[in-house]
Image (cartoon, rainbow, N blue to C red; front, side, top):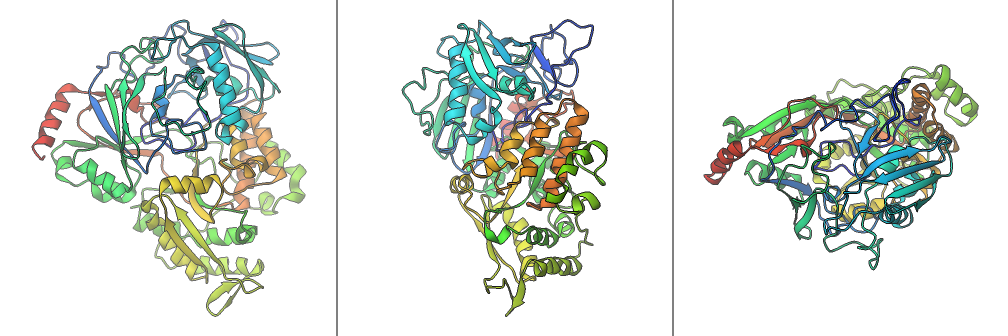
Length: 613
């Protein structure tokens, strides 16, 4: 759940939802087939399909995608092992989120959801038609098993995500009830609606916490048909998919088979795409997008290029500093390292001007703080004034802007003064502390693509007397190192949604900082941040949510836990001209599961590929 999938063009999850009562118009009858937390659901109770799909899309054909690294497990919910890409297609969830609405989900595996008047319980009633791929029913016992397995043996993320749930029990074979510890976190219906329901009996004699090396039993639109560990995995469309005619599935999951090929290096994967071995790329390497798509297949129209805008928060990407290391414990040191990074040079020389500097953990949204704290935000921050940097109250957050020439001397001088204030000085051309220990650290990366970002940064740091070595390791080893917080600095992304909620505990709290496998890579641990996270989760309306998000954002920024990098509000899509897709724009940019193979286009494209283009 924490890592971006190369297979999907939708948000990684609901990523939290606004903690208010399920909203509906005052005169409208109550609905238990949908939950919407920002007003009435956009779709009526009798809708037949999402508006961003083609309900009559043809089924069949094979699409070949790619993933980087390796895999050795088919359980994506645990900390051990490296799961194969695309496993989410094997299991259905209780509700299905709309890719074109914020904080809205519709009945799917669950036929209905009911919230008690005192908000102390949430009850899901399962669709009687729901069954696993071996024909056995999906029951409430499977829901209970899945929830408990994730909390007790899953990634640490789930313990934080479901912290407000006290217990879950089956009322009957089809009804399951969640009892809540607190009624304040009212996003829980959506969070629980995300729950993938796993078969209890399949795992009855298996260790859920151990990597799974055999194809699992699913209930979803695809089954795992073939695999070669670390090389490829193939998902076959389930022709007997129980939900095929539900409005939440109609027009989706159209490919007859989805094959995922694994590569250790994105450069090799790109060459495979150019050769026709890979059908689709969501291009996130700006150099490739600007200069790499001039090969013959593009010129002949066999490969199509599209820039698709999306209307979602972009979160924060940056160089993350592990504050568990004494080297990064001082906030002034972390700010100095941020000052040394010349974004304008990199954007001009490496990214062809395609990116915007990120100045918020909630970039591209109204959740981002700006100016000085006012009104409700200031009221949240004021009780902690003595525990916060003065700049939180006196300076709008900003980053230096260079002329992009590569001569960022002014910023480096300012950075050096910050380091001096923190007790560092130059001796023999090296930056050392009072004990004479040199300022050396490692930038750990899982992908060689990030070297071109990191090596210039290391050169700027060298001008300060800092030695930053750049090291690329195998993705599986990298993930293990991240799980154990065994690194100095790395590049990471914190994804966000319009409606941040429980997942923020796993990002920023002290509890997460001390939990191996959490997403709090930087080791952020502050009672103020802990309190602001709870204020955000407990917000009762949109205004309260905005105030809490602004306050949390501002405190995180002035904590200098990352060197902010950049974001874009476009997807750069490259694909062989063998697809059909809906023309209807969608808020998430695109939904790849709504695409299909166009038989005539595919025939012409495949013929050209067989002929060597």
